[in-house]
Structures are given as structure tokens and as C-alpha cells.
Image (tube, rainbow, N blue to C red):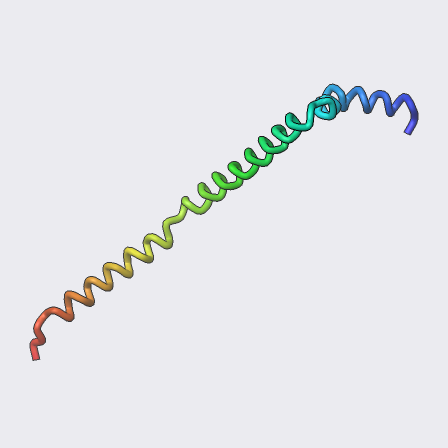
Length: 82
């Protein structure tokens, strides 16, 4: 790279705030990283819960099983007609 390109790249990085990150104290850097990671984790969690929560296939299967179970128990309690 040429020197002119390097200085323009550095000015773009400085405007983006990347060089400002370097001047932060270590605890502040840790807080920035922790905040970013926390945001990412909660984002993935809520996205997953929304994607999975949209289908109630498991609950429907459980309800059908419980209904069939109670129907079988009711038939077992009835006296035989034979």
C-alpha cells in the first residue's frame, strides 16, 4: 500500500471509532466486549425462542396422548356387556 492510501485508511478507521477503542482503559474495553457478547447471547436466545415457540406440535401431541389415555381408562372402568 502507498503511504497516501494508508493515511486515508487510518482516517476512515478513526472515523469508525476503532482507534477510539484502543485508547479506552482495560476495564472499559472489558465492559464493551461483555456488553457485545451479552447482546449477542440474548439476541440468539430470543430469536430461538420465537422460532421454536411458533409451533406447538409437541403440546398437541401431549394433549392427544392425554385424551387417548383418559378415553382408555374410561373404557376400562365400564362394565363388560358380555
